Image (cartoon, rainbow, N blue to C red):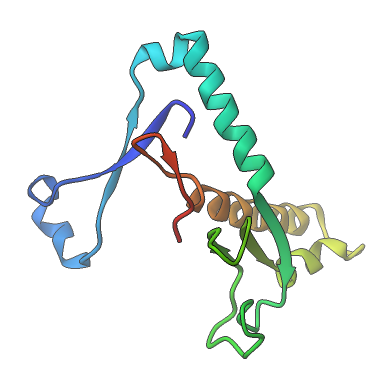
Length: 143
């Protein structure tokens, strides 16, 4: 995300066998070399990352209920992102306690621990990336 940004692929560039999915496709574009090599641009990116660090809150929840209401969820939620709004000052990233609990066990084999660690890390990474979108220099969280 630091070296580039996502952009929506125009429908006429999407192969015919992929159009049935009915979703937007995005591609990753590298930023121009000056953005990567220029000191001022690197400082801008560092400021952006620092802003993310200050404005994202990770919260453990039960994956069996909706974080906003506490009502039962139709399926288990491993992670959910809620952007900052008038009500909420920070972007909230909810992570299900059910993904953390296995790591608290002492009887896991190294392979089991590696799988559970990877699962938790991928959920945190996914939910964090959901918060990173840059359009016209304005950062916003999208979910």
